[in-house]
Amino acid sequence: MAFRLKLVPEKTNFDFFKHQVATFGFSVFMVLASIVLVLVMGLNLGIDFRGGTTIRTEADQTEPVDIGAYRSAIAPLDLGDVLITQVYDPNFRADQKVVTIRIQAQDGQEAISPDTQAKVLESLKSVNKDIKIVATESIGPKVSGELIWTAIWSVLAAVAAILVYIWLRFEWQFSVGAVAALIHDVTVTVGIFALFQIKFDLSIIAALLTILGYSINDTVVVFDRLRENLVKYKKMPLREVMNLSVNETLSRTVMTSGTTLLALISLLVLGGDVIRNFVFAMTWGVIVGTYSSVYVAKNIVLFIGLDRNKEKKDPSEKFFDKTDVATD
Image (cartoon, rainbow, N blue to C red):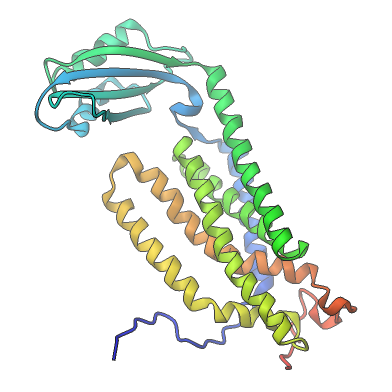
């Protein structure tokens, strides 16, 4: 007989709404605290949003490029945010190694000074004496400001598209709950970046968009089961139907979130500095996304209520009523 790993029993009967006032209140507190943190502490914006200079270097060498050595050589110059990446192109020669070095704007200047470029080149020569600078580009404050607004509009557009999708597939109450959960996930993730002053750049925007997709996927799975159970258990109070639906999809949720977190935690520990902030955002997003699917989206729907069979709602289906009894 085949072995099957079961992290959660096939049938569970957890009362996810037993402490609904505390869990929902905690979510509201986290959102408000995140907004305050962003307004008071601000975000540690990266080069993409602050502006800076990109230096393109080239060197002839057969051995692989050691990005760590480049970073260690430049570190004593104290240039602030520095991002180093190797450029790969099939048209390059086998011994042609090209690297881009992005340095944040210094003292409000649009581009780093020639003296600073000379110091960077001198430091890199300690890694490879044949290295040379082949191109220099600068990103000014105007372009950086445009990127900030583009990032904001991209997140808002994704949330709006999800709102319409859920509205068309289910009912408007479901769409409100789903979007509330998404806003919760994005706001709390941005808040944690403000709290710890982790670098916030375009890769984090990509992580936020990915979190939106992951969170809504988990929410839709439970909503689908809830819709089926609403038809199956017409006399059961809404609160109990929701609780049953979450329990029936719990095994799937734990397995999906658990395996995703295994991969993300491995990348967080072993992936290196280049992708660490992105992976951290994804890891945190998976955790809060799983939490919000149950304790935010479902609570919002329960609070609004559903017009089942187009009849008058049963007063026992109130949001804070703890006297609901499952009857089928």
